[in-house]
Image (cartoon, rainbow, N blue to C red; front, side, top):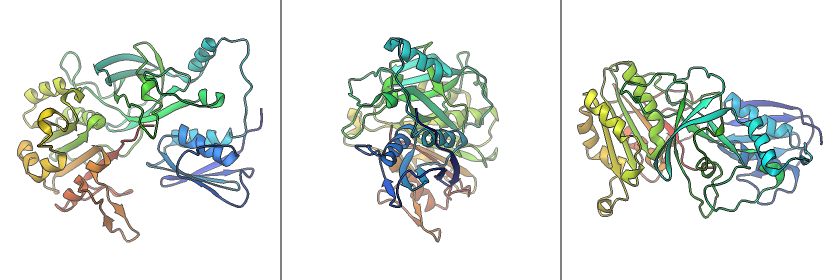
Length: 407
């Protein structure tokens, strides 16, 4: 069976350091920027597990008894604990289960790993769901805009025909991904949803296999139905919240695709607070059928005179010769016209979620100087208008939540 490794874990920003009670390599370090193609030795196997099991890991370095793993976002307690478990169990090998049919074994894995039930699915189209999940145990209240983890086992079937190759230990693990909590804003009776409902709503698009990567989680989610079991993280985390927004501030939500999810949750919270300033939400998608919340927003537009909801598409037939992006809506002044107020950094907060090319997050050097991407993004446009961008622990008035690549 093997022995577990004793591990001490600490974090420095987006890097987690794991000190072990035994050496995993010699004095020569092993560095990985992605899952090793052929993980035959312990450091490569450990790197493979960290990339495949811990969402957002983009760099792993193993040397002697130290392991460093970097993520695209800060480590939270739950994710750090999961990564620690991966390191601890590197040398643990479990014998095959006997006297069980494959179906019985898969059900045992579900019983051992899942902690929530899918209680509602609104299928907007074949690849786009609004899904609600009810946890087995009540969860603590959390701020609008935060995210948690959804997961299903690799033993679950897929909705597509993509061929996966993994060994028995990998098959018994879970495919995980972080999802921002979404909100329909109003319930079936037309009232604002509660701030902490029993069901947690998620906005999910099925990711199709690409040439370079086979998505692991969403093709499995799209085989499920109401009443099926799933794993949902109990910790909700993230800095993409309404902290610092005053009652009279104008609030601008800009998103692509399912990046609308946290924006809807924060919009609902602002309405519950009886927010006094202007609120506008602008969403860009490929096709109009990729918008799953338009009916709810139509009700809100009639009810709240200072609220605006805008949508733009990029691949409808009429878009081919006149493609418009969020950056164009800002540059033309149309966003301010629709909102009914200027983009004034003294009283406006802007929230960005979705395609990193739209966000255009800069890189900061040691002196705090910013270098923006070559392609003009919203961050640069707002910076040039006097806005400040969230950076580390310093809160500005431009807030961002990057997500794009599905694992």
